[in-house]
Length: 310
Image (spheres, rainbow, N blue to C red):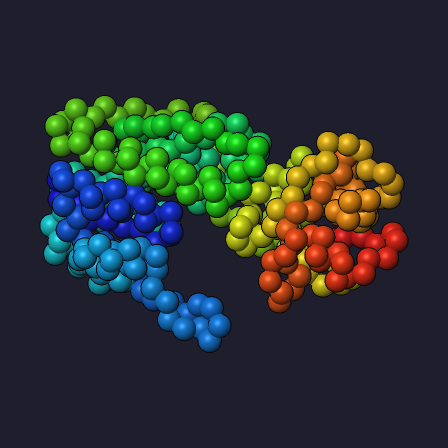
């Protein structure tokens, strides 16, 4: 099947690789965003998808969206179907008709749960035990089209968004290949979503990353894991930002202090009093500093009794 692939995120790469290595699929075009300033010096940096396409020797178009140059490139590729993975843009009605087979989307949740831009993060925040991937026929709505295939995946207690997303991307790549095979044989069966069961996963904002230490330790842990490894959950220490990148509930009650109080343990480890229980810091990053163990950070900070985070 002749495919045009649309994606921008690092999680788009494993599905692209799966399609590129599938003998029954021909990737006629990869469409991704143009290079953008990134890192020190704001050097123009291509998307992860562009780098992967170049390495795989696939035809590549870098365009800001599917209007203008992007649409022209898609039309010129004459795909049978569009495949969209973490592209970050709703397709216009015109774009949905560019390929005779329409457009299919690999979404990182079990639709209709967690429709939107942040399904992996929201699943962790909500404490879901099971998530998965869905292959959906796209329509004009936001993740509202009928589902062609889905596959479940457990969320482990130590999963952060990075680890879970990478696992779902790999699972999704295999499922995409299977689904395209079914479509080619006219063997796929689309199941309408039950809108009554839908939940929303909007793009998370910077303020959503701020840790509220009055929550219980389990909720703090879910927040930290939802934003790790990047951009990280945030709090403050002595008036400056501090990222919390890893940790775990201690399983016991705090030994004293109000929520946010820093509790130094005899082992040298550092726990924080929460609204219920305590949260042991694993890795942190002070403003402008590298990530480090919480023990190393505490040693350098020379903590004083009664100091707090937040």
